[in-house]
Amino acid sequence: MTREQSSWTKSKWLWLPISLLLIVGIVLVGAVVGRGGIASKPVEEEPPQITAPDLEEVTPATEPEAPASSSPKLDSSLNQLLDAYKGEGLSGAQAFATSRTLNLVDGQVHVEIVAAAGDMPALQGAVEAAGGEYRGHYQDLMEATVPIEELEPLAARPEVQRIREPHQAMPGSSP
Image (cartoon, rainbow, N blue to C red; front, side):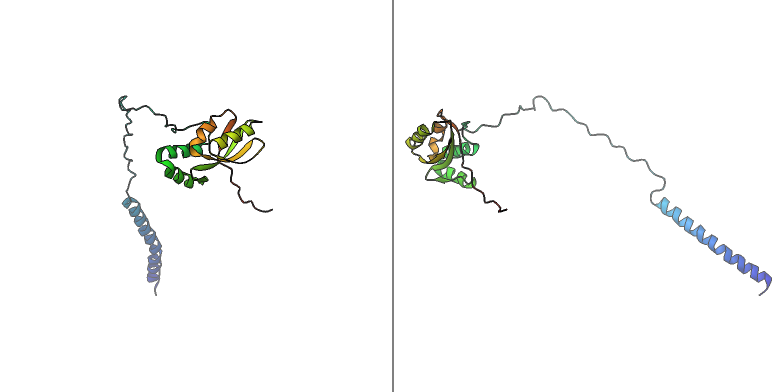
């Protein structure tokens, strides 16, 4: 190989990396321009227009209807049981009692009556006179079964502070 051929061969290999860099640069520029070129302005949307309703369209809020029977001395579940009884009879009351795990047998519901101090004998007589069954008491707490229709009259008595469904015993974990 002569000197002329040797320098031409060297210069040929020198241009190879330069041409590769040039090709890579063109490809990268094409990729960037192909994606959208110069960044375009985002389309500005108008904010949504909120209009106030006409005064004629606005309806006043109504209070939720209180149950037909709402004795403040009865637990809400017993008021609801009483409403079911008044609306649908014994079958409606039984369906409600079953859904709430209330103990209702032959139209009589198992309850706890919280009494004023010292009024237990009078309250026991009132429960039995109403057709209920006295089951026992401890201090000012009486356990009884009472006919559904006698819940309100018993709750209205002055010696009664509250009538509620009995607390159910829950199995505990042993230590």
